[in-house]
Length: 252
Image (cartoon, rainbow, N blue to C red; front, top):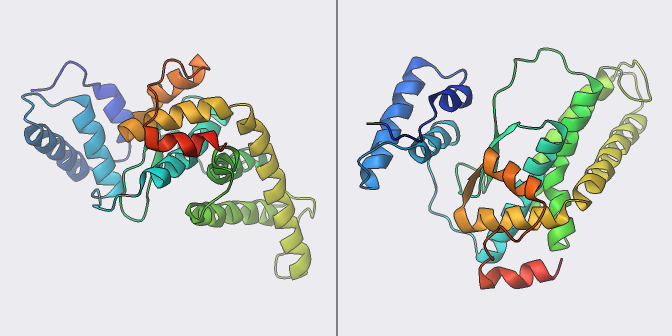
């Protein structure tokens, strides 16, 4: 049986686009998770874990050190917080469990299908891509290789902007544009959006630490929980971090 906390409407939103086979697999996986935890009811936590498994794959056995977990949490909270700032209510969940190639991930709530992108939308997406490494710099004092794929995605988005005539170059044919000019334009846009992301997150540094501490403690938090932490604007409601994380935070 389903527990009272199961929100079928929320599950429907998070599984938008799932096929019938995916939904069947999801329900079976949630029931298996409940059985493994010796629970006589299938709870919302089981469905969330099952959704992550269907989308992201199985959990992996690799276990980063506590210091690395702290950095991963800060990185993912950076992405999530910037996402909430430019599109409130967009984050579905944040986790620092290893799945596939990812050490952590932010899952967003499905929105309307988009076939056209504005300059503002693309700039916001670029800032979100860069927010992970920016948060690492603000809180941990340096960035890591965990942002490599984020940078690749940011460059793809910037290239889309330039090719669509949304840069200072205007409407151009990439094949006819001098390579150095094109590269400088792309780099300039990346730098501008990175600076904007830094300005936005610098004002939320304390909240990044609070949310990251909670994420390390629990390994997964929902978008609603993140929004409550952000709206509180203080760390007093968050449990103290493990002693082993204290040094990492104190250096910020």
